[in-house]
Length: 439
Image 1 (cartoon, helix red, strand yellow):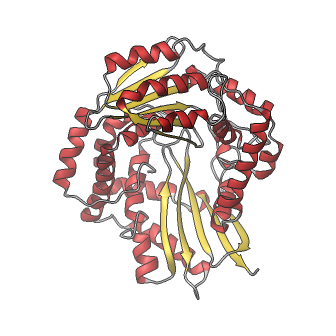
Image 2 (cartoon, one colour):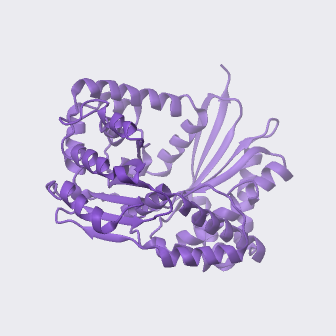
Image 3 (tube, rainbow, N blue to C red):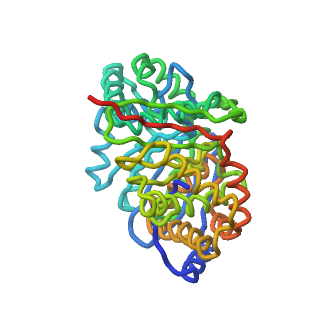
């Protein structure tokens, strides 16, 4: 689960006590304004700071072929000014008041945030309510920011052999669902985007009825909520947001892609279609990920790197905080002198063990402890608390957080075997092989 990558081993007793305390203390005030805007407020008075976040329910999942990357380009343009605050004034205003701001785009959402001392919260109210409805989208700024995104793609993907291979593997894994294309967009689509495309995207998705405000930190709910209503309540509701109707059909056989690029060493990736956070099996898969592929104490790393010395690195990830079913993938970088076939078969051998032999009680509990400790220790950050609320509310419901720890605890070794057998099959697998080429 892509919540936080902290690996901390603490005793089961301390984890249980902390988790129970968190579940009992998760007090969130929720209100939906008449224009459809949802507000989630979580008071946390440990320090005089506050994070203000606006989550729009739009990402690459809501795009179409030929216009991929428009969500990410629009994110850049959100910092380019309104009639009230000109170019660069948004971030300068935040910084002059001792805060910091940024944004990020994903497959299912685009989020914006400011972190301030708690007495500066009114600045976020003014800035975010203004750009929710008054963005300029100057044609000159659009041209320059589109070029910035294209360069970002070159650096992060086109010039990175492993990223290129993963991108193409994902495109092969999905044949009907928009998860098939990258969040940053295809290069040709970025080149053909117009300012009108951004205007249409902005007017369709950047509306209060398609957004959630999340505030966490040192504030008084009775004081802040009327202020939010004052600034955001007057923004008119937007048109009904079109639903994403695409459904990925069941995969009927293994798919394989080979990417040949200049690289130092080969790599092997394998992705399996798995359910999202709304499905009960996602929690067993989360525990399985901890056992199989999370960190240097995982089975994959120990077997392929330490014991067999086939790989320089090995691991995996399960991105289940999503609107729709996505991928659980495992990977390994091939050791010099070894072959991709050797490494690939070694990956599958570790997966097969999970299907045929129950995990030991100690190993199962260790994986649960890691999940719980990472989840709980993350609550020290008000930004992380707000981010979880925003993520879960956008793709499902924030109230899932209240039962998250208890559901992880309930996972049994039989559950781990069952989901391994059900989802980790050859017919449900897409394989990507990176083959280095000479300059």
